[in-house]
Length: 107
Image (cartoon, rainbow, N blue to C red; front, side):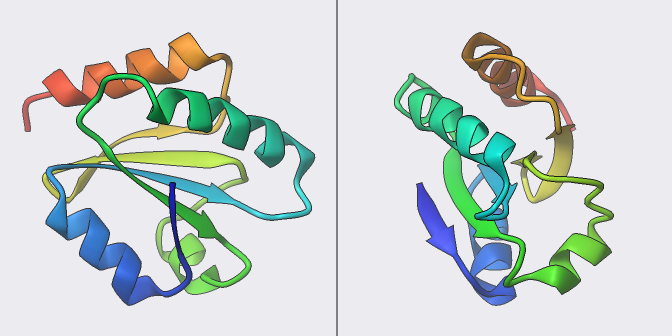
């Protein structure tokens, strides 16, 4: 998973790839560590998403602009538009199904 630490790189990734998954976390969040391990597994499954990892401590403005309620958070984008937002990382299959749903979503 590629880690970005500035808004320009993040926006470039969201706008460059047809499907983008942006994982938002903070290092001291225990639940984020579990979610990160789940996403490491999901990232290795067959899919069309480009993954970005963002430490929100470095991008508080982005968190405010996007009205991020808590971490961990997974933002799923299709054609530069946010289609799905996940706060409850229930399981690897759940996350994978959410991604598959976004892949087939028509904007």
